[in-house]
Image (cartoon, rainbow, N blue to C red; front, side, top):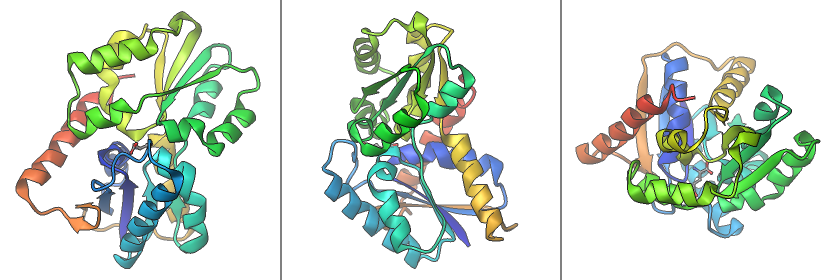
Length: 260
Ligand code: DGL
């Protein structure tokens, strides 16, 4: 049986990329809702509808679990999806807790989509983990657009990030939390802008660990021949040019993987 990874677009590949390294004997299906990306600037009701359509498709495919490799979709839709479907549904939230567990003295900047930043889930998370009021939140919606058009390194990307991050005194910070899966593609540019005391924190490893825990709990971990299929909004990707596009994203992630 296949494990599904779902995202609004190609951001979720960052989580799948890690999962493929950790689970080399599983079969995967990656669902990018390319017809509707970006989610992070859309009304919540619309996002819930898109996520439901994607989950209906994936459940019909007979997947054994769905990883919602999207902080935005998790924020607005995961609880409802869990009440509808009886398979493990793993969500993602910005890893602010992990950042504060690693360093509880310095400030932490969480970057995410506007929907995630403004969401109830984020508010509840901050109330739980940020006792000393060390966490700042910054929406970076344009990074999703840059990522979708594979514009990783450009003057526009650099000046956008420089402008957005200019108000922060990063000598006071220990971490930048990548709270949107589309943001991992830009670690090299972030690294150039941030001082060495600021480290990246994301939820990718924790999410895959949680996936394994839930599969093991239901006796659903398998040893099968590795495979991965891709689909855009319910259409299986077969066009060689599109498959090449996806490979180029994965290659980009290889280059970003060890940037801390
Ligand atoms: N990749 C998604 C996330 O982690 C959302 C990007 C978007 O569609 O706005 O939040």
